Length: 117
Length: 117
DNA sequence: GCTCCAAATCGACGCTCATCAATCTACTTT
DNA sequence: AAAGTAGATTGATGAGCGTCGATTTGGAGC
View 1 (cartoon, rainbow over the protein chains, first blue to last red):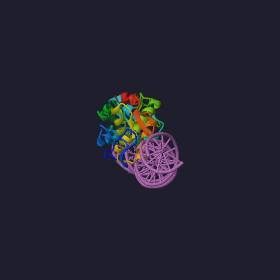
View 2 (view 1 turned 90 degrees about the horizontal axis):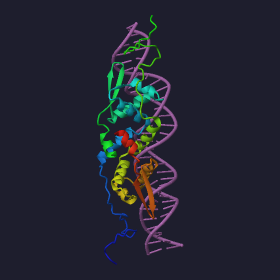
View 3 (view 1 turned 90 degrees about the vertical axis):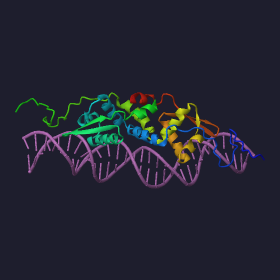
View 4 (view 1 turned 135 degrees about the vertical axis):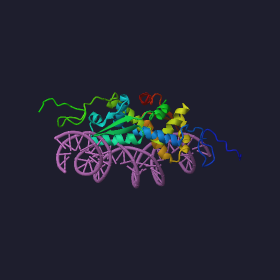
């Protein structure tokens, strides 16, 4: 009986030993991954993605009253989606009298975009 | 009483009339938005994002047994996340004997990456 | 004052998600 | 054939999500 365990490419190894030596590790650490996943999650709904698309193409602020009729969903639902985007740091809002205006926050998508390559 | 409605920038308008003329429209249509949101949603979890990160950096196939010990979650959970990524078209898998190897599908993230700019 | 309006919030509904322990499947080794 | 192993599947649980109708909030106009 030899002492060297001879971790062969098949299954010969000490019991409880992992089947492979882990040789891969994520370059993106948990904290960064959590941050990017949060942004990705916020974009993970067709309505929110289209909302961001409209706001991005428009560079300036856009009134909510223009956003609501673009979708076949009720006004509170649009409000909810805008809140999700705001809490993810993707958009900002500003009130002027009765109206509320939304806009994309510059560079908010940069980290994710850079990672996607 | 004048007949012209005079849609002023404030609230003077005919009842039932929208507050603003909708002048913005999404460039990204619903179908494309749904497709991209599906990918974004799959990336909207820190574990899945790190899984993709590992697989992307590795260009080749990676054994599941190397992926499991990278996270503090049970093996069935890793399996579940890999399944989600596979169903989103982001990764592919291949079995060789006892082991399963996963790899990123080239160009799977291109559409979303291009949109993010 | 009161009324009207845009937008946000609330409360509830069904559905989906992340997670785990237990089990199952398919393969390898003895 | 029997035992062992990697990975997938199942079933359950608790949390979260998308949606809506109803209500509330805070201005604007009469």
